[in-house]
Amino acid sequence: MNAAADSPNSALGDVIGRLSALHPKRIDLGLERMQRLLARLDHPERKVPPVIHIAGTNGKGSTLAYLRATLEAAGLRVHAYTSPYLVRTNECFRLGRAGGGLLVGDDELRAALELVERINAGEAATVFELKTAAAFHLFAQNPADALLLEVGLGGRLDSTNVIEQPAACVITPISMDHTDFLGDTMSAIAGEKAAIIKRGVPVISAEQTPEAMAVIEAQARRMRAPLFAVGESWHVNVERGRLVYQDDRGLMDLAAPRLFGRHQFDNAGLAIATLRATRAFRVPHAAFESGIVNAEWPARMQRITSGALFDWAPSACEIWLDGGHNAEGGRVAAAALGDLEERVSRPLVVIAGMMGNKDAQGFLANFAGLTRHIVAVPIPGTENAMPVDRLADAARGLGMRVEIMPGIEAALRALSRLAYEVPPRILITGSLYLAGHVLAINGTPPA
Image (cartoon, rainbow, N blue to C red; front, side, top):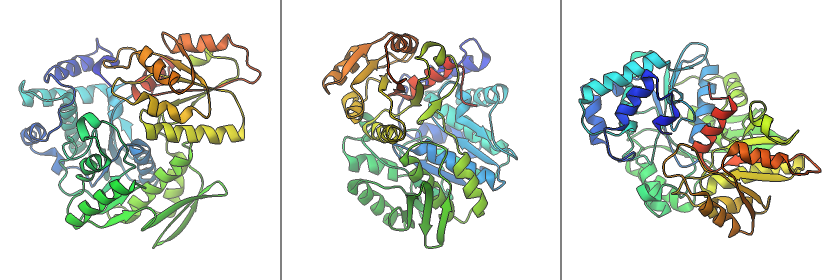
């Protein structure tokens, strides 16, 4: 998200605005500027607790949420660095505390960012690099037992790829996304993601395409890193609605994740495999049970149950929010909706807004068998959002009925004027930027 989503008149918003002006590009991959910043900060990245480094295209945030909830259930203090944020920059920085982590406060975050601003001395650096340097400073200053570190973009040249010896490297499902930065083939993208693998460090991989897995396997061999791949070293299945995990250490029969969708069983399994593949943490069985059940991650097939949206929407409707924005993200959201339809049938309406560099038709094609009703909306306050006419044309090309509305409120009010025999199921999707806007206007930002 961009700095405009924060309070622009606040002291924190001011410093983020200044940092955002230090580089002409929002994204400029490379490690030289990051290494310069960390050297001037006396290398805080070398003073953080054991790190689990997470790359991939889809499922990074959910996998991190399972890891955090499980480690916290084991009584550990867990730092976490994630991106992008949905409503406030603070969401990216979670500091480990006994009994559960907390988002960093405004004053502490501002102080860290101002320190980075001073030592950077006006030199060119992207805002993500500056925020990542501030994150390492915060994590080094606050004692904890673990650091969960999510890659921002790619892996090889991402600002987080400065940890020399993490406890584990995790690779979630890889798919085609950010081709303008990472390459236009699956092998090229997988090469960027697999570059987080470090010598001798366990690598835990989700299910991948054959092309992506071949790249991961080759990099693991090159780095002499033990590879724990789903389907070979470990297995996860759904049996009678429960999560059944198995590896060479035994079998665990656990309750289903709270996060909705079949793919969440896979993400939870990846988190379990990660913690069982590394010796850095002691995690009892009860902590796995608690972590899988209690993990939360906003805007990933999130059921909205209260807030301003229901003042505008059809009476007794369901509202779901998902930040998926590529073809694979659309596939898992559509599969989750298919499961919902089997349980309780409702007419489905998809309200979508997307960024201009996304494959709108590839994303929306996943919903063609579930609905013919698409409402295209803009994403307010966001640069490079896809024009609604272009999004609508993509939907029409799939044979879908499309309406264009000026925003979420107008879209929901228009739906409330329609006559439904059964209250509809509404999915708002297509972008994490749109999801952040929805949570903000609904009055339910992440905590």
